[in-house]
Length: 210
Length: 247
Image 1 (cartoon, each protein chain N blue to C red):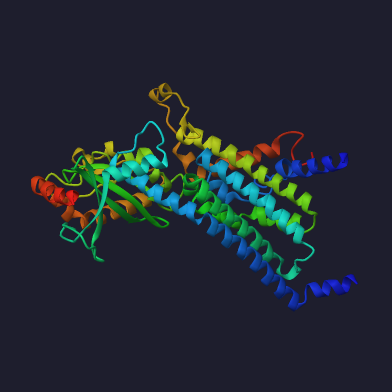
Image 2 (cartoon, each protein chain N blue to C red):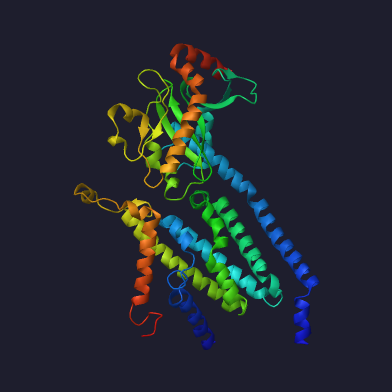
């Protein structure tokens, strides 16, 4: 049991930090640019992606002994696409406002390379429990970066946090201005680039052995 | 044994059967999810449309979020859906060419009217409502209920600051010509003073969305101009509309 726990912990740390899908593998950048203008959309996107990653890995891993290898990518995509469509339907039924804001990006989870990448690289070769944990870990790793980027972009670009203004008015009177570029795609590129650099240069926890 | 199993797993018949089985199972899953949630989604959409209509008319209390029952109640007391022909007259039997219009009324008096807006956007259609005061030229409110613009950029058209901008704008030039309301590139305060009444602040990073929406507004308002003309001829219109309400 003890070894089991440390085994899962290992998978978690690997997915969330050491081989972080965005900061280390540089996957899923497209949606990380698109939904990080505001915290609220980034958080819902993170939850949706984590759920889809976890359950697609679980299902694919349970089926792995029966999936014929020459159509495995198609089967993987069928599983992922079905889960994404179901997630989208649920959002439309219960979180209508947020679902309107995320619009096409929920559908685009299907093409997010993180999910197919985990299915192909991990779930096809490991048991369902490990795969589920791996999906959660990668989802959380993606979420961490997404939320960090959204926090900085919303704060610097619109002076807000979850839609509430947080920059005091007197700073604007003194000439403070929101950074317009943070609202645009280049702002996200800069922040993601800086985060990748930060993660890979932290001493001791960097993936590069020095 | 394992060799035999492996070859069976990749045999044509097994691959086809597996593909069919997968398609069937996930097809059923998706269909059942969609069917079960359909009612709730349609409810959301209908409610969202009504909420937007009321927002355009400025009838939604701003301090608290109204419940679905509130929305329905306000809608039933203040909004009346009618059809008008191409000359702007209200007709009883809508034909294909007739336009949809919503009248805002309080105690049998017409307060204004709401025009449904359809415009081209950057990625898809933009749908919304524009409310006018009873003078037929002042915008009372504007709201958008469906679009597929980029979240955070063109998607800002559904934010409050953008929609509130439209309040009090005039669609008529001093000379009486229809000029519609345009979305400026940048801030309105940088425009010449005689144009400021006909423009709203633009959204940075969404120039194209703004341009398409400006075009769409102008197109829709041109179509509805006969209605606005009737409203501008005050007394006659009030009398005409009152008979409609009393029915």
